[in-house]
Image (cartoon, rainbow, N blue to C red; front, side, top):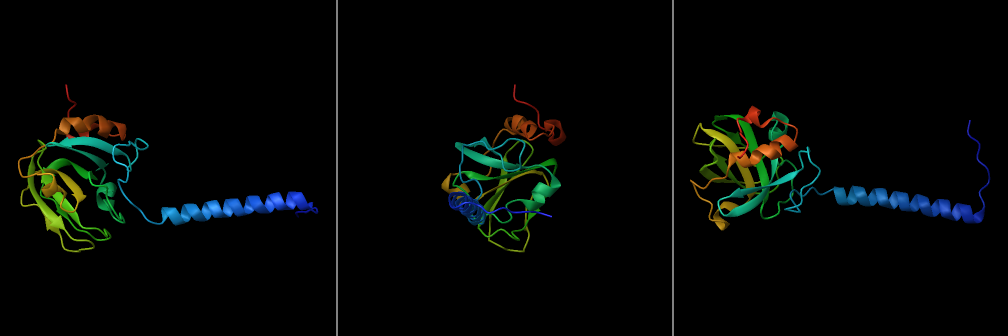
Length: 191
């Protein structure tokens, strides 16, 4: 059984004000957390070993900031629910082997550009994907090891065409920072 004693006027005012601040703070967190934006602050490395950590990667002449999808669960989640991407931000799907790859846009409310890369980091092909489209966008090649999703039209705006590449070895420290072995993905460290 709880017993409450009478609270004086000043203490009641402070207690009431504290309760309002706590409730407002909670409400503000819920309000501002309601819209999920991905990659809002390129260049700032977020908490490491997290799916939300963004890592810099040089692709051709462009520096991009990518989240790494390393596990099957992360690859399935992808950019689901993401309502926007900063211009040079995206998601790089990293696979342990090369194969043909297919993607769909279920639950992704923004248009995206997608690039399919081989094990050497060379862009094989790129395509456009429409928001919330349930049809599968598949690679023509069965040699795809990396898939990059970027804001709609990004590849064209940055003159990234087939044959442009990134260094998979540059991913090794970022994969390790996420708590995974780069060798699992057949990625060796840069020397």
